[in-house]
Image (cartoon, rainbow, N blue to C red; front, side, top):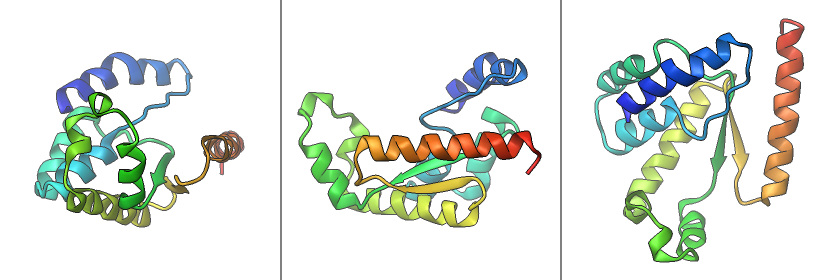
Length: 145
């Protein structure tokens, strides 16, 4: 994951940012911090070192955490055909409870960067909230706030 992320950062993300583009990613450093560090109990210092290798000191300006109770998430996933599930979706409930707890702890530690959204709402409601937040973020950034 780290090698792939390092390549993505160096070949795609940084050049795009340098060109003034907006970059949107579905996962980044926080997923490594939580899945490998917290849920899989890899020491924090090792995960931080891996993340620094992959992305340097660059962090996202904003991260949206789509939060849902693990039981509700499991019910939603169980409605998908088994062949569309990956190995991560087959982890035991305790793993997902640790993942959720880890993400919420990270969001609590980084409230200026991580915005927690209720993922039980409709896609349209979530997309609208993200769009509104990104527009406000862009305005505040433009005026230096």
